Length: 486
Image (cartoon, rainbow, N blue to C red):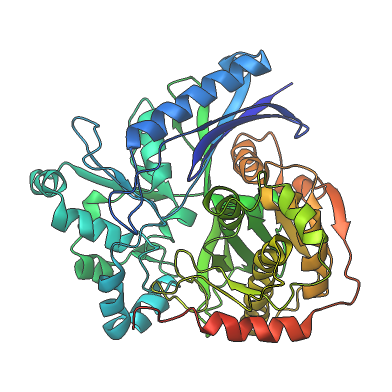
């Protein structure tokens, strides 16, 4: 029996998952790490916490599986995207806390970029100027961190997304690389030219030698410090698309995690959005490249946590389903969940959450249901724009992530979309995607064989209740949350 180890480095935790050659999950280890909030709207991680938690998970997973590292065929890596680490090439030490994808400190800079460079950035990168992406984080570090600036002057500065930081620390050769899917999230990478864009590098004051070499998502890179070779890398959402075996043009998935991320495979050519959605690289395997259309909802699972930890309305995430089923409707309550701004198609970092329609008759169940409706309505909104941009009519939505355990939400999602919602039997779909990429590299699997490997746990069928009136009212409520600071 051969095994593949998948490292899934996420926003709030690191995880290691071991799969055997039949995709059976042999072992999993997960560790949360500290979230750092230096100022309102700022989010950072200690890069040492990322590495130490990752290494701890790897060692625990191997111990739990009762195998040796010699039995592991390859290691795949998937990671939180857009988050930036700066380190010194000589010492290998991080020069500043990692600036996380959720961080909004460069909002004013992105507003300037939207006024002057929006079309150029979108045409070259498929992205919208937003603090979400890596470029303005790197620029901020160069302008505001003396240690980063000094390393730049010495020529020893290295920038990277989290995959780069992991590979640097986990390879014997200290490789400085990232894959195409992660590179396409930086707002510095030309997604048709498949190179770091010189004009954008000049715009942000970043030298190309600071950036990693871009490699295929499926490529044998180098021996890890544990022995097995690292052979597959993809950003977490692209890895999830791959793990869902959405290999054909028009197939789509939604991962309901801290945020929700909807990706549709659009084939070998990028299809640029006219509605503020993103065009990104799904993966690159040798001479084959797959592009994807993407829409992001910045808060979905985070809203369930907010109901629990922020408002105290529920004691466990599972209670959200119980409360939502206690009421027959939202009672006229609508929620715009812009607790950290709005992503596609609005890209309004000043938007704030609003809860409207409250009366003396409002109960906890109405509020919880309104929050769940927000997640389902935003998903519909993005998918309808995606269909309009691509000309592809979606036949089924493949779903994964912790929030999909809420059967009420999945039933409602199928109704609101009026298509089946297909929940995968394998819960660790993101980790599986990275494992698949690594296994393909070593010849353990073939992509044609993988097409038939996906197993559904349950398929939620629509009942015909699309909630059109509620959807229209919700869109009006959402408008009230935007441009809050004006």
